[in-house]
Amino acid sequence: MTDQALKPRADQAAAPSKAPPDPPGGRRRILAVDATRGAALLGMIAVHSLNDTDALGQPTWSATIFSGRAAAAFAVLTGVTIAFLTGRRRVRASAALPTMTTLLVRALAIAAIGLALGYTDAATATVILPYYAVMLLLTIPLVFLPTWLVALTGIAVAGGMPVLTHILLPRLAEPTHPNLTFGWLFTHPLPSLVELSITGMYPALTWMAYLCAGLVIGRLNLARLRTAIALLATGTAFAVAAAVTASHLSLLALEHIWPAQYASTLDEYETLDLINLGGDGTAPTSTWWWLAIDSPHTGTPLDLLGTTGTAIAFLGMMLLAARIARPVALRWLVTAVQTPLGAAGSMTLTLYVLHTVFMSSSYDNYTPTTGFIVQLCGVLLLGLGVRATIGKGPLEALVTALTTASRRWTTPAARRPQRARTPGNVANMPLTGPSGGEHGTIPVGSEASR
Image (cartoon, rainbow, N blue to C red; front, side):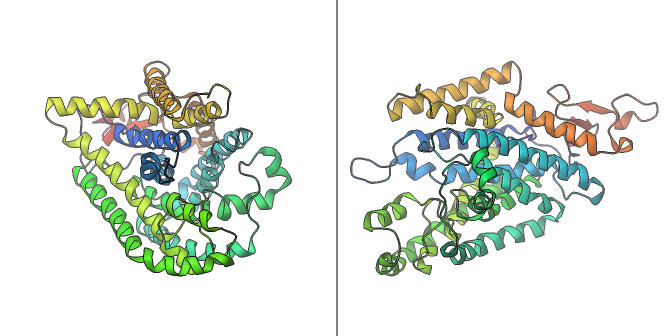
């Protein structure tokens, strides 16, 4: 959920496409990426805070818009983050040890935070951080692959993991612990791993489709207008294709799902809820036709395609808005929207933890709508306040410190960037990042120094 992304200056909409990839550690933030992440955070808060059904039992607007899509957007953006962390290109063998160590430490830090959150009320929401930690570990071998092979891996996962999950689920135990904790992990390591990887709310193996998509996107030049348009068009095509296909298959699927209901553990109302509101990470296995639905959190191919498309399209829209906002009034509007979202999106780990703790505390005694508004205002104001003062969320700073130290320990001294000006080598003099050097060094002549 954290992101050391690249952020261009307000008066610089795009950088030349010929700019070299950023070196690992040399990063700035892209406001539109942070704003997309901030919007995804608000979507998750809406899902957790607001009612998912109305008085008639139909999905509410918040469930229809955000359920499944907000969490998927986070996963896609996690892949974008990893691309930024690894220089937006395939990692070379010479940088293997520092890269693997950095991602491993990041995964362990996020897992520790997530397991600590596991002691909160599981009825509020399933903590997603331990699942993200497993996804980070699974992404380590992907950073050494060429982009086309990462994309091919994502396609294979999106098409193959739902089928494999359908085969494995009857042979695996159902999840028994909604939120994993340190104690449960240490006493039940294998069931915990199975839940995090296959049977849980956010099954890491299936969700690697999102990470692959994000890793591919993060290696693109996101400052180019052409890239923003391509992302918007591609994401929209994915989402529409999934919705249209599911619509055409729905009646045929239901003709097989209803008769097979008696062979499953679901009653009629539970089956309706799963179809209308979504599942708990996987689809039932009473019939193969369950894989033809696109309900949220079912992990079917159409669910993965549609939610990936929505995330990609929204990111493209945010990038496009920042790129073409030339009239003063329109530019002001885009800035007014993206700035608070971007501030919140730059510290989503901290804000997600605060949201989870708040929802599980006695302070959350509001009505659903009021509680959401309180959290909405709190998230945006806190993000702006932190951005204007200390610059980085405390948990983001902790993870950055740990990963920076791990990279320093595993990088040979001869390959570490020099911070002092050397005669005759002014062109390669490193510049500290916008947060006092915590973003690493950026060589002069790169995209970040223009």
